[in-house]
Image 1 (tube, rainbow, N blue to C red):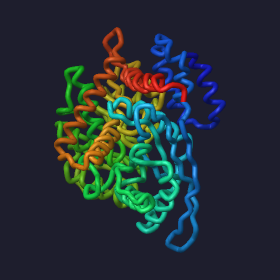
Image 2: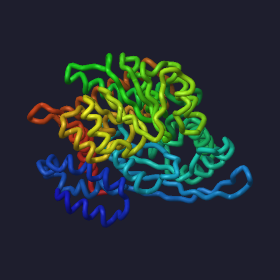
Image 3: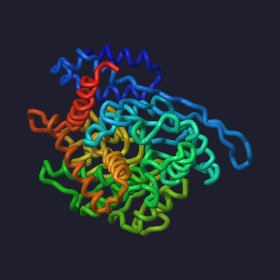
Image 4: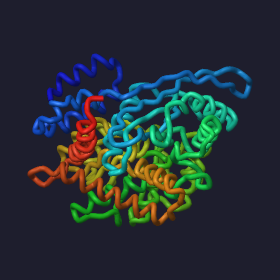
Length: 445
């Protein structure tokens, strides 16, 4: 495997796709040595094949707003790799959505889904539609138009989308209803469904819960735990909500959450009432956290700043890609951070990731540490297939077991001679092996 040649070819074929090229370089550079030690992967051109999506779909989405004006958006689905199961990955509705972002997310999803041990391939999709400021009826009409094309390409044994940024229970409901009408069948084609029509308990919290479970396992390798630790969390959506809830349950003091407007510092740690209010803020579609400081005593708002300037033991970036850069990393390390675990997809820039690893910080990469969301989506698929529902305790127990298993796999392949665990390398190799071996078994297709 010649990394420089492969990256040069990718850059030539995918000009301007910055996020995708970043994700590809992160994975390929960490598995290069392993691939070169196992010639069967080069002989079968696995790297050249795995970086190319099996199918890339783009379509027009036309819909009427409340003023009866025609609006036009772009819809996408990247069906990246189906070697170990149906394509699985979220749908994102956000103005920033483009092919590069969806390919980065879909590529990451291949390895993340492989790590869960569940039979799921990798995919991602969405639209540049912005749900913020839209009425429920406008969102319904957009979702119905979006699904009127997407339904041709998905199915419970083909491709099972889920939610992501801008796609919650409301949007999943509207899309599921349209799929059911068009296909005349009630199947588990989407995950993140309502509890009364096929959804799973714990799914909204699962990514945040799983991230904390993974961090808990990393801390345990050093004889540490969440108890009494100061934790900085970014974001205030489902992932941050789940992470704040579980970290607090484990005895940590969560001192920050953030939004596009800045972050709030919570002197005595977040309370259950504040966690509930996070959901109210998210539901308002205003994307601001400043009101927390107005509503609760002991909370201060820092406009336009990021939470990584605070002195904390654990950092959980749970907002969006590339939100934690090299300067943030240097500040965290200077202030004594011991563990960083990604709740979002690729929230840490490559140079910041390298800095954490160079300084022997416990660092959980998103494809491992935030796999709890898709793992619980897989558990929802299992419940749909069996036509039954597990209790919250059963789902949480299975989620915890999956995260422990992911940690063990990443630790197995990431432990260095000096004892430090490079979880980035370990997670990428562990995820790669299962998919690559399946691709070899299935021939050149």
